[in-house]
Length: 159
Image (cartoon, rainbow, N blue to C red; front, top):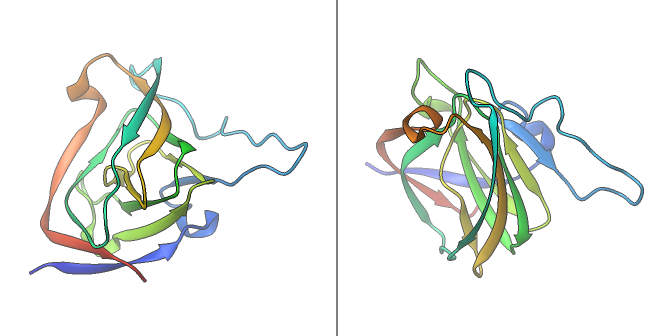
């Protein structure tokens, strides 16, 4: 049976267990992620990549999640309308499906997943989107990312 998960607005407080929300800075401000961005356990090489992704329509069907157990991962929109993130706490090395949450992200908000945060791959709405993505790597994909299949599909829907 497919579980329904309603989108909620992304706020720093709601997203805090999973990472950081970076809202556009006010004139003269320079927010920093120095306390939460970086790598551990051999993930010492920064990797800055750029992606161009096709849009999805709601509802979005989710069947898998990923995490980076040695690195934070920051998605900074370069040209994005709205986008969706789905996250879950960890439960013994797997996503805690009881704690799944889905957020509707504005095109001017960036997200930094904390080390080990389970998340669904990025999905944009409305039109294609471009992101800059920063993470740290060991140089070995199997060390840098883990995947988990959800026990049942999740339908991410408008709230």
